[in-house]
Image 1 (tube, rainbow, N blue to C red):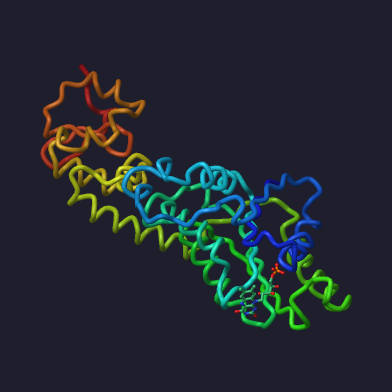
Image 2: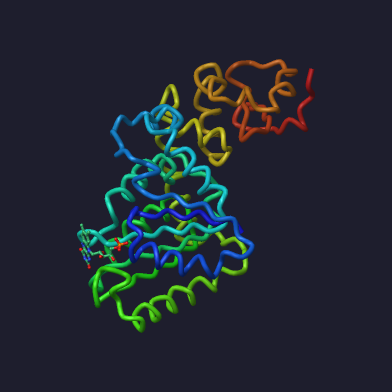
Length: 294
Ligand SMILES: Cc1cc2nc3c(=O)[nH]c(=O)nc-3n(C[C@H](O)[C@H](O)[C@H](O)COP(=O)(O)O)c2cc1C
C-alpha cells in the first residue's frame, strides 16, 4: 500500500509521535512518503491565480507543490496530521491546502482522488480539534476524497510528549493504532454521495459557464478534454460553429480525429462529442458508425 503523509509541523513533538504510532501499524508492506511543512513547501500562495487561469505547472511554487500533489495522486491512503493552532490547522498546512485549490471539484479535479482514503489526525492541549478537522476535511472533500476518517486527541496533561504520563501516552497510542488497524487491508473507497453531489453540481456550473465563454477557460477546457461533460460538449457542438471554439477546444488532438478527418464537413453541421464522432443533421445526431465516411 502506498501511503502519503503530510505533517503540518516540523517539531518532533506530539504530532510526530502520534503519527509514528499510526504508521507503525501499517509500516510492514507499505511504501510511505512523508512531507514535513513548511520544509517541503516553504511559501504561502502568492494569489497570482496563474494555476486557475493557465496551468498549475506555472505556479511559482510548482517545484514544491508538484511532487506533493503527485505523491497524493499515487497514494492509496492519505494521512494529514497537524497540531491545533488557534483552534485551526497550522498556517503551513493551510498554505499547502491553498496551493491545491486548483484541483478542487469547482476547478480541475483529478479522478484518482475519488477512490482514495484519507485519515485526519490532530492534537491539541484542550479538547477542541473540530476547527482543524474542518479545515482539512473541507479541502479533502472538495479535492474529491470520499472516505475520510478523523481522530482528534486532547492531550490534557501537557504539551510535551515526554512529559505526558506513561498511562496517557499509552491511551493515546492505543486509540491511534486501533484506527490504523482499519487500514491494514488495501481496498479503494467507493465514490460517496457527498462527492457525487459535488461533482454533479460543479458539472452543471461548468456547463453553464462554458456556454458563455469564448475562448474556454482553462477549467472548462479541462472538463471538455476529460469528456466528463457530455452536455457541455453537446451544447458547444449545437450552439457554435466548430471553427469558433469547439475545434480549438482540444478535440482535434484526440485519437479519433484522423477518423473524423476523413469526413466532408460543413462547419456548422459536424461536431465531436465526448471524443466520439457524431454528425449533426438538423437537430438529430447520428453516430459515426452510421455515417458513411468519404
Ligand atoms: C501557536 C500555538 C497555538 C496553539 N493553539 C492551541 C489552541 O487553540 N487550542 C489548543 O487546545 N491547543 C493549542 N496549542 C497547543 C498545541 O495544539 C499542542 O501543544 C500540540 O500538541 C502541539 O503539537 P506538537 O507537539 O507536535 O508541536 C497551540 C500551540 C501553539 C504553539
